[in-house]
Length: 277
Image (cartoon, rainbow, N blue to C red; front, side, top):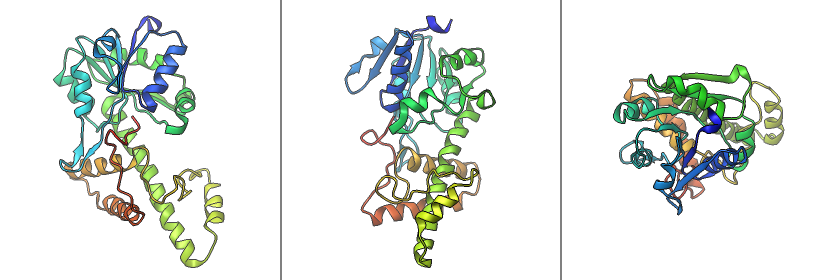
C-alpha cells in the first residue's frame, strides 16, 4: 500500500527538502507546495498523504506558539486527507486539529534533524516515532513504514500528544546542556583552567556526550539556532498554564537572552525569515 500512496509536502525548508529528496529517490510520486514559489495548493492536493513542515514560531505578544502557518496549510487541503505534522507543535495540537477538521486524519511525526546534516540524519535516524489520534491510529504503521528504519527499541507508535511532548522535551534538554556548558566555561575562566580540556574529558562520559559543550559552536555563545529559543519559551509557557513550576527553566532562558544581547544578538523565535522549517 505504501508505494501506491502519493506524497505531498507543504514547506520546503531543510526538513521538507530532505523528505522530498528521500521520497523522490524511492520512486514515490511527490507533490510540493511552498509559499516561496514552489508548486501550488492545487498540486499538493493531488496527494494522499500530506506532510506539513512549516513555521511554528513563538509569538512574544500572545506568549504562545504561533500555529497560524499550520492552520493555513490545513485549510488549503480538500477532504479527506491523511495529514502528518512534522513541524514542532505544542502537546495537544494534533488532537485539537483532529477535532476541528474531522474530515481529515491527523498524525504527528517529530523530526530530530540537524540543519547542516538534514539528509544524513533523515536517512539514519536514531529513533522513529509516529503519534496518532483515535481516528488515525490504524494508519500509524503505514506512515511509519514510509520512513527509514531506526533501531527497533527506539521505534514507537504512540498517542500524538506524547510524541509532541517528546520533541519539546528533547530540544529543551539540549538547550539546558548548552546553557550549563556556558556557565562551566565562565567558571573555568574564573578559576584559570583550560575549558577545552575540561569539555573534552566531560564529553568522554557517554551519559553526557560532546554535543552542546562547544560554547562557540555557531560563532557566538548561548543557544540561538535551530528551534531552541522558541521551543524552550513555548514549553515554559505551557508548564505555567498547567500549573507546573517552570521558574528555574525561565531563569535559565532569561540568562541565555541576556548572554545573547551582550553579543548584540536577539533571540531567534523562529519567524519565517529565520526559521529552518
